[in-house]
Length: 106
Image 1 (cartoon, helix red, strand yellow):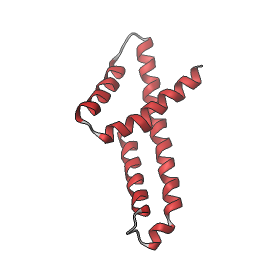
Image 2 (cartoon, helix red, strand yellow):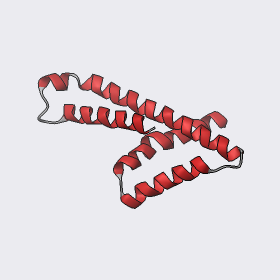
Image 3 (spheres, one colour):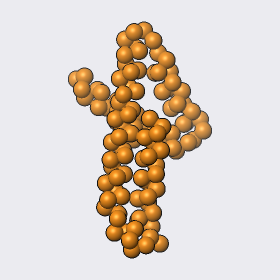
Image 4 (cartoon, helix red, strand yellow):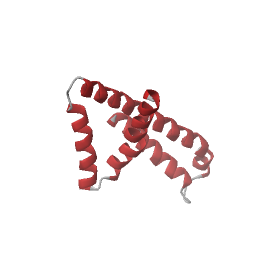
């Protein structure tokens, strides 16, 4: 999950550079492909979080809560430290992952 989040943040940074008023012409020409890479990295991050959510559900069915507790701790840590990187991981990865899993179940 964190590797995929790192890839997403790099893609986001590259895209932001392309929309900057100081961006070179060659960079602005790449804007569409950079946007596409950003969207792809977002999907990969969400998919990696789906695996974590599914494992958390399996643990819960087995009467364990280790991964669920870790996800809760991570969310609380993002709120406590006001870390926007962690917030982004939840908004772009974990939250859509729960939505995907919920859609599969219902």
